Every structure is written in C-alpha cells, then in structure tokens.
Length: 352
Ligand code: 1HN
Image 1 (tube, helix red, strand yellow):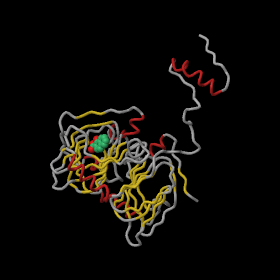
Image 2 (cartoon, helix red, strand yellow; image 1 turned 120 degrees about the vertical axis):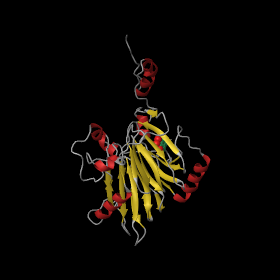
Image 3 (tube, helix red, strand yellow; image 1 turned 45 degrees about the horizontal axis):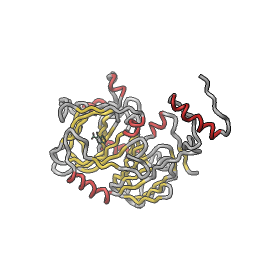
Image 4 (cartoon, helix red, strand yellow; image 1 turned 135 degrees about the vertical axis):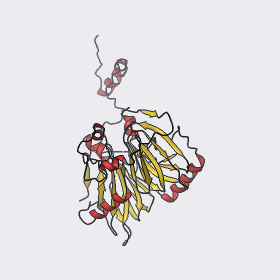
C-alpha cells in the first residue's frame, strides 16, 4: 500500500488526509480542531455562590415533590456550576440530600468514592459495609469506593446532608461500576462504630491492620465534636495565608486525605481575618457552617452566611474575609487537589 498526500499547504494536506486516515481509525490534528494547549488553564466553569435562603425552598420542593423509593435514585439537589454540562466541578458532584422521617435510601455500591457532611438535623443512620454510623449535624461519614451503603431515618423532622461523589472523574475514566443490594438495607454488624473504635483516636492505631484497612481509608466516621476541638486547638499556632486556621480530615493509616481523590477540611476564619489571594488548578467547594464573610473569586464578590456554598473554578484568583469583628466563621472545604497532585497537575500561586 502506498499513501501519498499532495503537499500544497499544510492545512489542505491535513484536510486531504482526513478521509484516508479515518478509514484506519487514525487522524492528524486539523486546523479547525480546538487548540490542544493554552498557556494556562482555561475553564468554561465559573465560580459560583449558592445562597441558603434560595436553596432552602428548593429543598422543601424536592422533599414534597419527589418520592424516595428504596431501590431508586436518591432525593438530591445537585449544585450545577455555570459553564459545566453537569455537576459542580470537573471531578466531583455536590448534592444536597433530603430524607424524611421513616424513609430508607436503599443499599447499593458504586466505584465512585463518596461522603456525607450533615447540614441539618440528626439521628439518621448510614450503614457502610455492615457498620452503622449515626449522623448528626456537623458529622462526616465516608462511603469509600465500592462500599455498600444505605441510609435509614426514624426521626421526626426532615434531615439534610451534603453528598459529594467523584462521579465526573469516574465517568471520564470509563470506570463506572454500580450494584444494587438485594434488599433495601444490609444486615448491621453487632459491633457498633467498629472503625471508630479501631482508628477513631487519630493517634493510636491497630498494630495489625487487615489488608482491606490498608487499601481504603478504614475510618468511616469523623464526629463534629472531634473536628471542632482539633480546630480549636490549632488556632493561634500556624495559619494559612488564604484559608486561615485549617485542618484536613486524614486517613489514619497513611496520613493522606480521607478519600484518595478528595481532601476534606474544616477551617476557621478568625474575626476580622482578611486572607491573601491564591489561584490553583483543581476546584474548591466551601460550605459555610457558621459566620458571615465575603469571598472574592475572579471578578465576582460573594457575600455569604451560614448554609451557603461557594465553588471556585480552576485557576480563579480567590480570597476570603470574615466580616465580623467578634464572631469566627467556620467553613467546610472540599478540594480535588489529591487527584491533581497524584497526576502531577497541581499548581498554585499566591499573590505577592
Ligand atoms: C448516591 O449514591 C448517594 O448513596 C447520594 O446517598 C447522592 C448522587 C449521585 C449518584 C449517587 C447516596 C448521589 C448518589
């Protein structure tokens, strides 16, 4: 076989080769193709602010309007960032789940890693691989990749939590697995809080971890009181120029992030704090636990208070300030920095 291309101009040579190459499932870059590289990240995603005052009625609407079937999808309100086709960032989705008294969100497992951070209410139980964890406001519960999980709730008022899953990353890698359990709930082990008993001190750990405990994070729940106390103790020691007093929920076996793809953090902006400006690859989502402040992101200025969410788009300059002179502001932060770091794509700059 001889293959020749008439070399008139580079553009027409490329065009002339198109059909021939296509027959063999090959191609050359065409002038009409979008550029492969840009000098720095150019994301269609925009930084965004969701206000609790606007989310609240929407959560009421899905609570009243959408039935929860134990074998169907969850009742969740997804935060859909402007500029993205779906989801909150290029690697993760943030949704707010509403569960009503007496409901069961049935057992299933997926290759996406996930966690819940409780926004409002308490008393629901999440069972993860047979271990049951009670969830109350401010608690964090992990469902690592491929862990069976179901939620049951017997309280008296609706409960609301934040769900984060690395779904877009799983999709782009074509690595989606999903399985429903054959009944709505899993049998619950008779050792309550097993992972917390083995790993929950954060300082002492089993001398002989099982193989499973070394592959994925063996600690499944982080209580509000523990996290707040740790943050309180850290105050005044060292602070981050942008995020002020900040601690990461860690995997107690290897000291890395709680989930392989996502870093979860709790931070405190002290009264009157004015942070420096930073930009980084990857995204950060902030949930305002309490306090009032302002976040500048690119050209935008977001004045936030408790219950609000803010997402920072890749490579957007951003900074935070606490607007109160007397009250601290506490934020829960999620970032996909571990994914970018693992792949060598992480960069950040601080404004000098
Ligand atoms: C999911 O499995 C849960 O298990 C919550 O509670 C939110 C959003 C998209 C896909 C799966 C859950 C979800 C989800």
